[in-house]
Length: 114
Image (cartoon, rainbow, N blue to C red; front, side, top):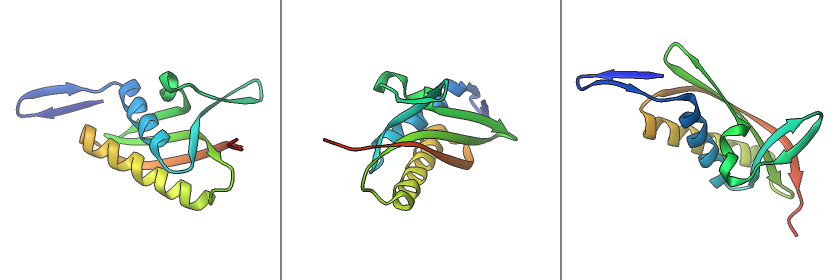
């Protein structure tokens, strides 16, 4: 992704966008972790792999994000989803200056906290 301004061209990789989105999502209320699925099994990603639960698509200089997350048992899914989407969109737009056109939240599992 490129931003061109009066100072020149700024290149932002999709990995950086994914890391910003993953970091913002993990900070949201009710999110236990980012998720990845392999051979039908879902697992929680460690904090150094946050971008692996994020798919970034760039269309007409706008960002589309797909997040795969695991939420905490007992939380209201609609509230967690709205807060997560709002937080990710805010962080991406303020940190990159790019427009976020959509964020899709895929809840891959629920974890019971002990």
